[in-house]
Image (cartoon, rainbow, N blue to C red; front, side):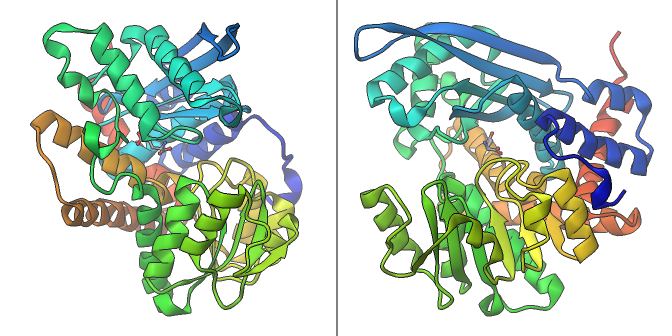
Length: 425
Ligand code: GLU
């Protein structure tokens, strides 16, 4: 397959399915397991009314897609964004199945979301939206069955509302156990040290490990980061603290560059006060599309899906693409990267720091423990580097790319569980 034979614009779920089918073929996966994984187990769609500040009611649509749970409870975030639809949530749920399996966690995969514009909703409207959604999901979620977490458009506050609503509607002696319903909570309400920055921290551990493999020093690394939300911001901040230089940042509001390196904390302050990246005094405002031409060693797409298209992949100067976002690279772009000899470190590996620390939070909640930040970071490093090494090993063994190598590691674990348990009945 070359870049000329593909068409961009296919459904996201079809793209996710194609990635896993490639690995299934390479490793000769049991056809029964392949068939099961081709479809999510449960597709939950709820329409529910929410009281707006104006006094009117509006109907919102929410989803929870439970892709697979052979390895443990369903696990995955809740996204609030205007583009949320069944196809997107299905793809994101499938990626969670492979992400948790690759990291060696005792979890399956799920994803949820509400189609909405969170920026246009007041704090009170978001609270009522979240509580009503949690109520509508009812017993479809639970600390032993399906454990939500933050994703794009949601944060620790949304998680705290979810668990509080669940605790109040599933009363009795279960009230305290309800804490383990969601991860990514605030520290005051049972969250874990290091969870907020975890995805960015994991991305940086992966960059560091790749550099070692490529024979580069951290101080030689220049980064371009697309997206300046939770993942993009913490990736940029931690990368800078590790001695890398962040030379360009781009989000939906604009783009800035500085070959000497941007001061990430100052850029965040600028974004918080002006609601835009443009006009930052510590860099030059550039046209958003020019972001993809900036000279860098590492490109981190940390925004939404399908940002790295084949046309952009032909222009980028990076040696490595580290996928902070889920599904940022189109299948055509993946082929272009391969043709150009640019390494792509796949989302299910690169951004797994979030769900890894979510697992630590869940364990702490269940054991009534509190781990120090140093312990959380050390354990995160251990698990994500192990996943990286397994991925590199499988890619070598099957003479394939890292994305396929990562899927092989995940599928081996899933297939082994099916082989030993059998398929019911
Ligand atoms: N939403 C994050 C992801 O896409 C985190 C999921 C979780 O912690 O369960 O991986």
